[in-house]
Length: 585
Image (tube, rainbow, N blue to C red):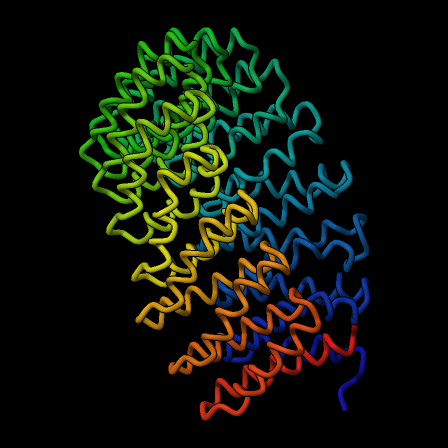
């Protein structure tokens, strides 16, 4: 018999030495349970040292361990003893697998944020220094992510030392270390005093922006936005703006791509005036870049960037580029533009939208690539608010009608989903003239998703325009289509009836819809018959009790004796539901 207090740790040791990785993983994930069983003192004296030694396992197990240790402070006796968790995590910070190191740094930051100042100075800061001086580059990479936790609590002399060490990491021989230093510079800079920010941090930043590796420079772009928010405006214009302008002309397209992606944040950092004078030309260059990826990123920011500018500047500088992009050779550039271009309408105002933007919308609506057309359709309401429904309907409706018959079913689906919104904007009269027939046509589409969406669309239109309108425009068409020779279309009509009934109310359902469904129960196709049973079940709560008893029940009884097993199943289910409704009332 194993001595009881030793039992958890003995089991853990056995499982962690087991050949099956799943067993080892499970035991690591149960560390908190084992720690509770051992108690705080034995966890500190036995479990943590054991984990520190047991660090040559599979990456998956080490990742789980790094994650568990991050929430282990309560199990070792609280914040007072948090420092005992540092050694195993320090070891994990030096392993080769990146995700294990990242998780260890995350856990160390979480523990460091809870530690007392004295413990940070005694245990955490020496750990950061050891990692930063590590022989193997992995330790130095990990150390960069810890400075922002260590720095605020350090004494003055140590702070100077930490700034110097960070500067050395930014000039490290290994690009991976410089990349990590560039990534974490913003976080570290946020903890540094303003006086040192201009001197130490800016000189470090300067080094990173001139790095010979594009992977380091592109991370420095993110640093521009982070540092820009920390510096005063005049310093930002003096130090950050020239860097952004240079980066927008960098020889590496990846760096230019990052500038295009971050440009809005960078504009916020430098303020409106420098944006207009310095960054507009840089942005125009990016919109005309010879790399499609850069143009995609820049095109996606067109609306955001235009909002910073006056309408005149946007028309003068940005619109010519937008026109070029709308006929770009890359479909992905056109797609990125289509997803945001509608937002330019409120910025430019009515006249400029009608003159300049509408022709671009129309050309994108006729684009051969379905995603481009979809992106335009889904944002039409933004234009409607600016130019009004009359103009929108004259210029864009022919294109919408064309798209309603598009050969790509996803485009047709997007149009259907947009119809109720369009209907509410157009009003009932206009809708009946132009789009009413389309909505019925979709109920006979070859693709099920379209027929399903069309049935939902009919219901939403009935909600929008009311039961009287539905009686005039929907019910007669439904009466015709229930006798369609193709059984799939008959099924779609049954689905539409079940959706319409709650909207149209008891009277119309009983007089118009119920007879159709009862008739359909005589259909020769079993799929129709069991769908009739389902629809009747949904109609029971809508119609009067007497109608349910005199009309629906006999029909269901008949279906429950059908030769087909599915028809019998759904009919008996509906009968049970009917009985429950009767009993409750």
